[in-house]
Image 1 (spheres, rainbow, N blue to C red):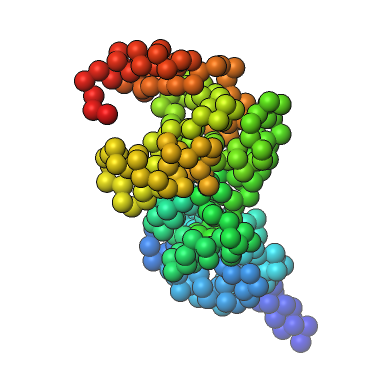
Image 2 (image 1 turned 180 degrees about the vertical axis):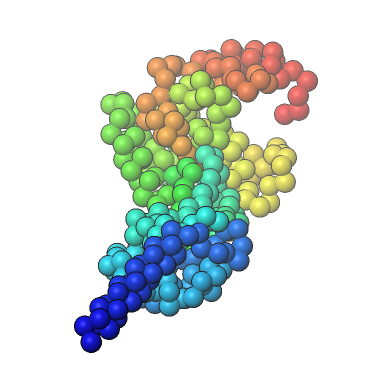
Length: 333
């Protein structure tokens, strides 16, 4: 009897060892995948059992109960974080769980460029990789209301930068980050304004910076461009800048700014109306924000393109006219 009992114990121990060995082998063996890359988005509050099923449905070729029991047996099932994850060939069950517990998400990026308009931002977000287009059917005003800024014009309110996001994130989430980034950058720039600036508020700086952004052809000229417009504002001279007129034309602009466009009155025609336009005309970057509040120490009131991306700056109209003759002789008005 005792001999039979010992034999049973040995068999049980052997089974336990074999099971342990099999479990260790499975945990450290690459998971078979239906495709070279398998992705899964985990929503907040999703149950471990559903997460296991989700991986199998996405292309992990192993029984879902096996994954689920591994999550539970590890004691870390409740530590799995919501997010977007991606695994490739060679990923083991142990590596998969570690990735989800650490929140090692699969990220995509979208680049929003300096000088772009809000309309261009929306187009780029709409075609960004794995970004859910929740704003597609919304007007600009509806988007701003959803972001907590009702009745605020969207132009200039979003900071141009490269934004990384979890695959499956929403476009409005990226816009919210860009909005907060611009608010921070604008506040920082406004704190650095020169004491004698003619700008009355941070929003004025944002509008001026958007013009500087569109008018600067070379980085080294940016602060001087800011000086020209600051000097004009200080003496009450019209800004006389083509980009504001172009912005006012909107989709009517066909790439050719005509004399009649400059003579047509409108809120963005800075040839006919003094002061700043009613809103920014683009999304300015950090350098343009600083150029608006801390322009170069210059008395220049005019500038003209040299044709190589740089500009010639002048303090008087006579000097400006000579520069125009030198650098733009033969060009149409």
